[in-house]
Image (cartoon, rainbow, N blue to C red):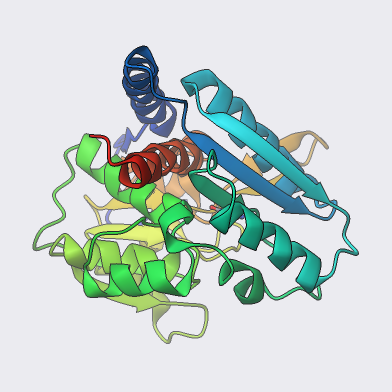
Length: 300
Ligand code: GUN
């Protein structure tokens, strides 16, 4: 396929999220070891998982493993899918208000079918909201006030900064309007002085809007939704999607929301899937946990 605007033989620079995340985690370990060396306790993260979703179970396992590696203590709370909203809320409330060794609380989403995420998240103290998803954290982000920011969108910003991709003054397009990624990503890009457009599956001329982007952040939740021909030559493409699939030979394959090979021939920078945004989400969660700990304990 010949992509409009592509140059013969051009390949985008890969933004290596795994490497950036590794550096962040190594620094966190140094910081935490230094705190422990001064006699402080370790930061603590409570991880709450309800139900049997296999992908969620894997994410949670990876988060707990990552905690251990940097020296954050984790407290795992696992519930069956038939837990009631009252029971789950009571757990989150107790962790928020009583558990002194818990600096951060992560409620893995999505919750089992009938349970509203908002109901549970509102029981979570904003000071321990390391996912940045409560209404108060979102409000702080909207107003540009200090607070804990959602992990995936802050990981996106960190990737742009670490790769020296200019944000200020640039046109950023965010595809997707979820509370978890799209909306907070747009707000963070705006705070970094980008001119931001948010679009979604119902937007008209989506291809044209995407083609106007210097920075294209795609969190559409649909496999290879953004085509290579939608990418502006020289753009930076950040793919937040992750989809597990089988190829024609029946082998497992992971891909994102963007047609990677085609987009790579047009863009100047692109994140791979896996190894792009994914590792950053966990790194930012660990970083937020240390931030929450320092704020609660009043240490620098
Ligand atoms: N499910 C998918 N991504 C996330 C995330 O970043 N945080 C939480 N809590 N749940 C998720």
